[in-house]
Length: 354
Image 1: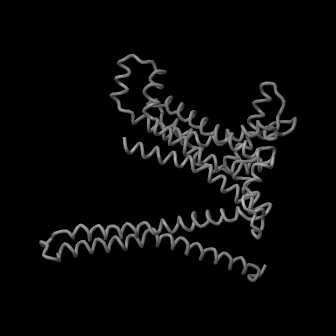
Image 2: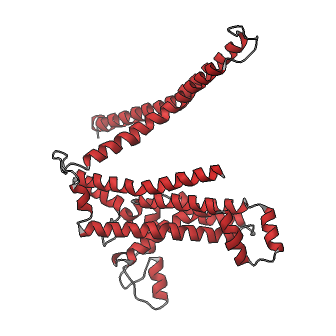
Image 3: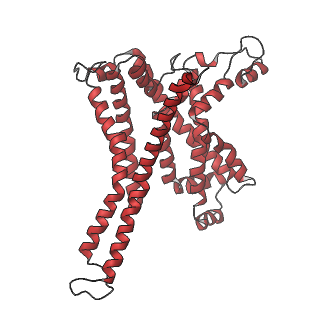
C-alpha cells in the first residue's frame, strides 16, 4: 500500500492529537495557570500594601478590612470561574436543552407539551423498565451496604485485615463493562455439554440441569443486581470500616465493662455511632444505581425484561431517534435523584450543626 492510502487516517490522527492537546491544555490553563496567576498577584499586592501603607496607617500594617475582603472576594471568584464554566458547559446547558427537547416530538420540530411524560406511564414496556429500576434502587443499596457493613465488622482488627479488605475492594477497580463481561462468563450456558460458566458448573455438580440464567425474568434482573452489589460492597466496606475505627475507644471499653454481648455491641454502640457514614454510603450507592447502564447493556442489552431507565433513555434517543421521549426519561431520572440529593444536603447540615 502507498503512503497516500494512509494519508486520511494520519490526518485524522493528527486532528485527534491537536484536539487532545487543545482540550487538556485549556483545562490546565483554567484549573492551574489562571488561579496561580491571581494567587501570585494577590500575594504581591499584600506585600506591596504592607510595605507602603496608605491613609496614615502605620508602616507594615495590613490593608484595611474592607479592601482586604474585596480582594479576597475577587480571588475567590477567580478560583470559582473555571468550575462554574465547566458546570455551565457540562451540566446546566445540557440540562436546559434536555428539558426543552422533552417537550417536542422525536425530531424536535413539533411542540407536544407533556405528552412524552404521559407516554412513560402508559406503555407496558416502560412500566416494566420503571419496575426494574425500582428493584435495583431498593435491593442494591440494601444488599451492598449490608454486605460491606458485615464484612467491615467481621474483619475489624482481625489478622490480615488489609489483605481481606483488598479482596473485597478489588472489584471497585473494574469498570462496569468489565464486570459485566466477567459475570456474563459466570452465567454462561453451553447446552447439555461441558459448562464453562461457574454458576452452571456448580448447578450441574449438585444434580441440576444447565440453565440459561439471563433469559428468565425476574431471576435475570436479580442476577444482574448481584453484579452491582459485587462492585459496590467494596466501597461501602471501606467507608464503614473507617467509621467503625473512628468510634471512641472509651465508649467501646465502657460497653465491654458493662458486659454487653457482641450482638448488643453491634446494635447499641457500633450502628448508632456510624449512622452518618451509613447514610452517606446508602445515598451514594442509590444515586449510582439510578444511573446504572453499562452492566445491563453489556450482559443483556435490556432484553428479556431486564431494561432500566438509563438504558431505555439511550435507546429512545440514539437507537430509535425519539429525542423527545429519551429526553423525558432523562428528566424523569433527574427528578428521581433530586429528593436524594436534598436529603443528603439536609443531613450534612445537621451534622455540621451538631
